[in-house]
Image (cartoon, rainbow, N blue to C red; front, top):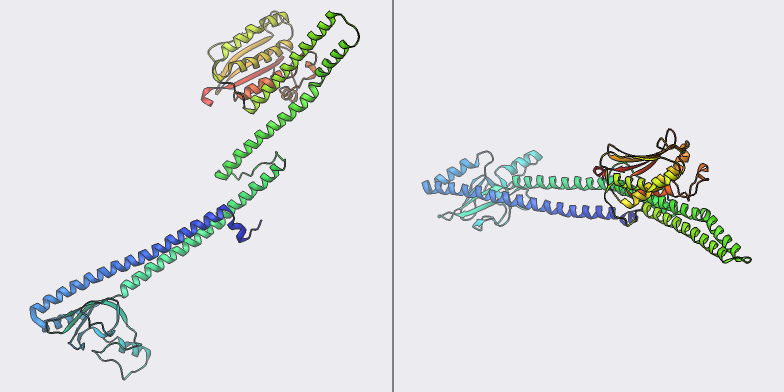
Length: 489
């Protein structure tokens, strides 16, 4: 999707990039000026120190032999390669000796350091420039003159001194090397600034543009999700950056929301279909009781039946609410260390009379301590539902255990298994459906129940970060409750 410059600058990424680039440019420009001025000051100070050393040496020569010795020393030093500027002039400013052919007017008129760099020509440079250009100038300046307007020269700084005989001595140094050094630093810093600015723009274009594309993808997916398509997911590139982590967390949240919505839809459908029958039965019983004349005992029997039917409906609603809270993670139940062996013993002891009445032998195989983090009441309720189902669908057996409850430990988890010797659920699809709300398979229609027992057990295991598995037995069905051990938390 192409964006105009104003539209791009409305994005946070573009504004941040522009702000950082502007801040970087300001800092870089200030750095250029600071470095160039610092280098100029350092070189100027170094030049002045060099000139002061030269002046001290010439002063010692003057004290040693007067003007003749000073002139000889100046002439000798003037001819050395890379020599400083030397000039001796009379009181009228006429150059007598040195390596300076002409000066900017007014330089030697004031004693002390020159306030500004001045232009000059070394001895013989004017003639050399004219020979190189092929032009002969009969009016060429002679030694001892001043620089005329239009002549090209070098820049320098110097120290001007008045000798005791009123003659003038100038010792200076050319600024060509410092200026070249300063120009090199300036060009280097400007080049670095340009390269870093270009690099910033390229980084913004490639990285920022890619980030904008990913944000556009997230926005597009969000619009689809807000439109009601909860199956949509935010794009994940696999780069593992902040965008991927945000998308993964939001996708997990969307999957959870979709699961809760599906559960809510199932609850609504189940209430509409499965609870319609008992409510209709209640109404028909009340209508039949009111029609015609009955004895007091008949009315009492009808009311008792209505109360029993209402209690069953209340239990069903409570189970539905409990399942919804557990699956949504909103349960207020507290967890602590639970001994599964003790919980199993309590449930087995509670259901032994029920099993005996049904002609089924119930047995528990407990060996060792099995401690998990959980809620004992919820675990006991889930286990009671599973044991109750196992007793209902087991085959009568007075000598061998028809229902066996066992505890064992595997790497990372503790498994609580309830196995029966009934017909089981041979089909994989039916075993997966058996844990859904109000689902009652054809073989279970003959037994009383609401179809919420295994659903509640599954919700309890979800609450405990475990799982509920239905496995085929030989014969019968094995229901396995797998609890994570403390090391997995």
